[in-house]
Image (cartoon, rainbow, N blue to C red; front, side):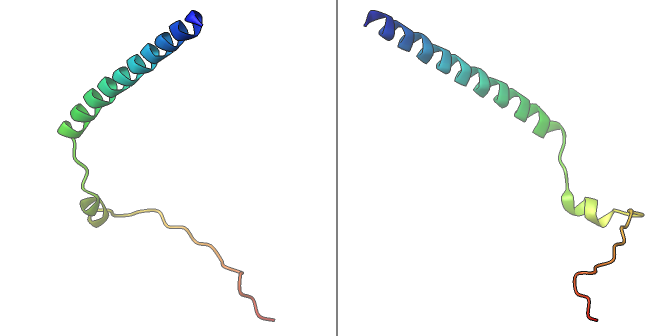
Length: 64
C-alpha cells in the first residue's frame, strides 16, 4: 500500500515537471519568434511574380 502511494507521488511530480518545462519552453520560443518577424500574406500574394504553372488534362467527363 505504501509503495503505491509513493509511486503516485513520484509520477505526479514528474507530470508537473514536464508540464512546467513545456510551458516555459513554449513561452520563451514564441515571444522571441513573433517579436522579430511578421508575415503579411496579402503582400506575398500581391507581389508574387513569375510563379510556375501546372497544366493537366481532365478526362473525368468524356462523352462518346
